View 1 (cartoon, one colour):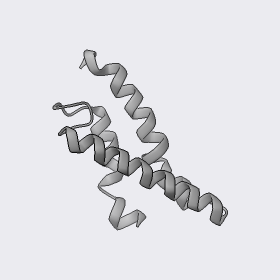
View 2: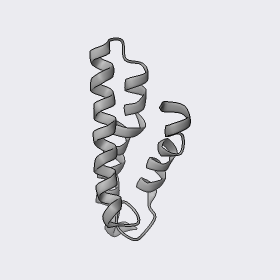
View 3: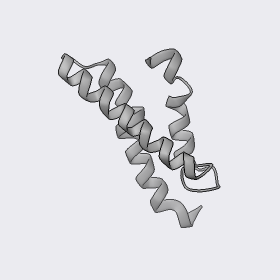
Length: 83
């Protein structure tokens, strides 16, 4: 929806950096410190998402958007692949 475009774009960037790509930052870390920092960032991001989704059905409110789908692609694989 055009009215949510700015919010969706902001969420997409944040989700990519911290969740979608965040799991790869952990997986490809070349030191224990880099791994620990990447894992902490991913789980901090998941906590933020839990707060947002605890208030709304979807990331921007009551409507499914591109941001939700972008997030879903990593969450659906999270336990079987990344944990």
